[in-house]
Length: 110
Image 1 (cartoon, helix red, strand yellow):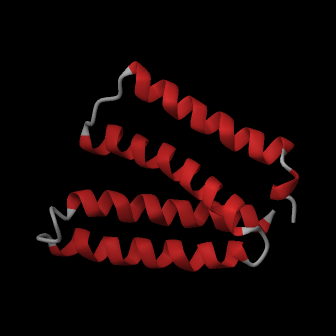
Image 2 (cartoon, helix red, strand yellow):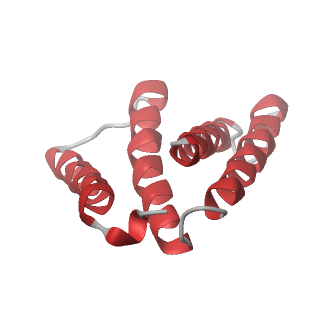
């Protein structure tokens, strides 16, 4: 269970770092640029802790899927980016994939 908590923390750091990347305006703003460094450093640190237990392919699939959902939500909430029906459907499919991996794949077991 701690492994999945570390994965969620890694994705939260990645979401923060990616949001700061957008806010940094190509690294021309100091504090958002520092947020990018902090966010990605934290993300990779916690990602390595997850890799001690879960295989790389499964970990990366979960990391990517959860990250896409959270970063899309951040773009919508923080930056006012629009989501159309196709985007929402795609995000729904990503969530479905995460559920399938966790409920039915033996590869996700540790």
